[in-house]
Length: 163
Length: 163
Picture 1 (cartoon, rainbow over the protein chains, first blue to last red):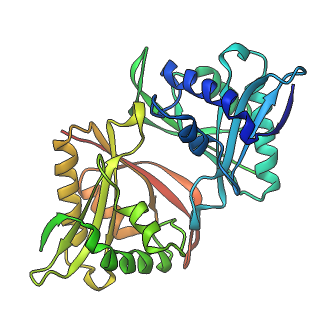
Picture 2 (cartoon, chains in turn blue, brown):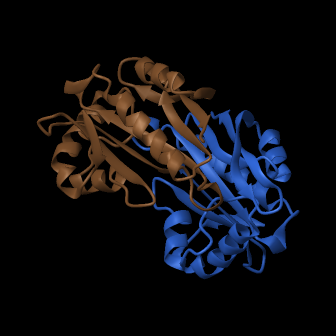
């Protein structure tokens, strides 16, 4: 598995992964009816943000991540990031590889910390991975995500210092 | 003091209030160089969000608020809101009047709760008002706002149920 910056030509591969994960209804509060252009705007953000993909030896895209400032202006020293692993590539360490690259990049860019604003509490694999990578749960905002299978569940705010 | 929906013709009054409060550097992480059009996009949001103004008997705008879903999709049952009181109208209860109207409206719209994502911890007046209005501090994300006068300070996540 290798990682590179996403390019506009990746949109036809990224958009179906995005839609399938959003439609699954367990991890992201994006609308379900976004067009390709809206997905590009929401996910493939321009600098100072960055969008990357993880790909297999044959070039198949396995997952994608975006990272950048969590807020503009007086909050732009704190990074945030989001991750999507293709449903056909789960359990292969794709999320971890993307996260390690995002943490390396954010540290290199000089961000002081990374904040996740909305980690679904029932997304146990992600929560465990973020904790392994040094994030801690600051709070769980109750009932703020309507999980397809679990109903209303909490969203964790997770945080770790960088550098 | 009365409250009404904001209209496009209010932008020439709202924009200077917005810029002065952002430039003060104590309460909001917006960029300081936004055009009027960018301020309109950031503050005067279309439905399902709502933007209101508080005005005096002579029509002078004293402050403004916006409210709407905190997240799209599976998070759109939780509201958020933001408030700006004109620096020339502080201490007159404008913020409280705007907040009471926003809470009434959000309850009427069926939101289950209201979340503030980033209340600057040194903004004592606002924190005290939100606590009086039933919000509690869920966590304070450390050092995530660069206050002009205080340096890096925390941002509170505040929350209250509605209805």
